[in-house]
Image (cartoon, rainbow, N blue to C red):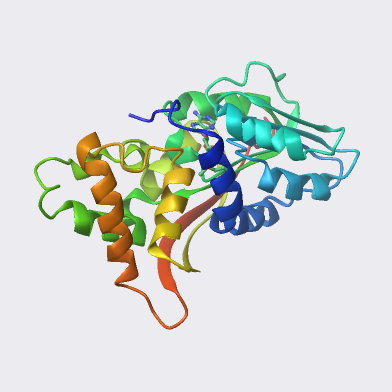
Length: 273
Ligand SMILES: C[S@@+](CC[C@H](N)C(=O)[O-])C[C@H]1O[C@@H](n2cnc3c(N)ncnc32)[C@H](O)[C@@H]1O
């Protein structure tokens, strides 16, 4: 299960500093969505607001921006940084957009968030409702069918398959594994909600980290404490150290490579005929 009560100020601050990967993917997503000056935009799962501030530069003072996230500490950091009168950051979840009027938003995006949404049908239904005709939704997420070849799972699983973790840990119990979707399921969900899929691609990302501990910090903060939550508490500290060492063992000449595969999907609410 995804737990939203494990986050704290330190995890939120770490994410703000270590989330370059999501931020760069988010910038590509915003390009694909063709966000323009004056647009009305909803950022679902805005986190600490890094991508939101980039979007605010794009939409300018005539645009309207709302960012929601269930984690209070992340929303607090976004509000501490916010200098834009046309931006609103607040707590909320993608499954309930009842605070927004129907056909009122040009662009909705979920950057590295869709795999956390529990009721994906409900979220997409509400996103469809609030979008204007011709409005777009953009999603970046992991492709579940590729999780086992991405470093996150490949290296972590290698450790958790060894004693003393094997038998004590179910590898299917990662919070993201429970709620992630395959790329085909994502297309099906978008079509099922009434969207027309405009573009869909899977990109490979490789980022170099300075240390195994930086990678584990990144994984803890981007999962708001859920990363090793499926490991029994008495083994968690040891698992963390073993995973750090396992990443260190993959060090190359210019750092530790961390490869993942990200789905970029853009879909449109076509006007009714
Ligand atoms: C990896 S962070 C991504 C943050 C930001 N969008 C970015 O690109 O850096 C995932 C975010 O999803 C949020 N989240 C989790 N469940 C959610 C839900 N049901 N609705 C909206 N956001 C959710 C988390 O609180 C967290 O801030």
